[in-house]
Length: 247
Image (cartoon, rainbow, N blue to C red; front, side):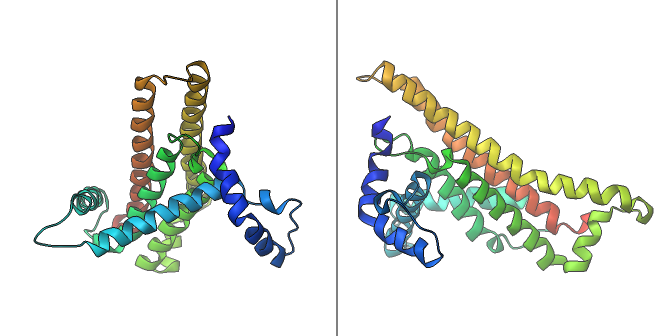
C-alpha cells in the first residue's frame, strides 16, 4: 500500500515543517515535522487546491458567445443543482442563496472520492475525520439557514411539535433526529469510500499489471453517487429548516 501514501509523504516533505510550526503556535508538539500532516489533511489540501485552480480557470475563460467545454460542464452542474433545489426546497426561495455552499460541497466530495482512484493518492473522504467534518458543516449550515429564515425563537418552536402539550415528547425526538443526521451522513460516505478504496487496493495487489476495468467503473459510479446522496440529503434538511409549514 506504499503507493497510496506517496504524495502524502511528498507533501509532508514540502509542507510538514510549516504545518508543525503552526501546530506549535497552539501548543501542539510534533515529534517528526516531516510527518506532521495526516494523510486525510494533505489530500484535502490537494482537493481544495484543484478546486481553486478550476474556479480560476473557468472564471478567466467565461464567455457568453463562445463558452468553453469546461464552462458548459460547470453550467450543467449548476443547472442540475438548481433543478434539484427548486423541486425539494419549499417556498420557492432564491436558489442562489444556497448554491455557493451546496455546489462547493458537492465538488469537494466528488473530487475527494475520485482522488483515491489515482495511483499515489488517497481519498480524503475515506477518512472519518473528513466525513464527520463535512457532516457537521452541513448540519450547522441548515440550522443557520432555518434560524436566518424564521428567527431563533420561531425556529426552536418547531422542535416542540404542532401541539403544545406534546412538547415534552416531541422535543427529545426532534433533537435525536437532528443529531443523528450528521452521524448518518458521515458514516454513509466514509464506509462507502473506505470500502471502495480497500477493494481497489486488494485487486491491485492481486493483479498488479491489470486492474479490472469493471472495478474502476464501479468505483467512479460509487464516487458520483455518494456525492449526489450527500448533497441531496443536505438539500432535504435545508428544505425542512426553511419551510413555512414546518412551523
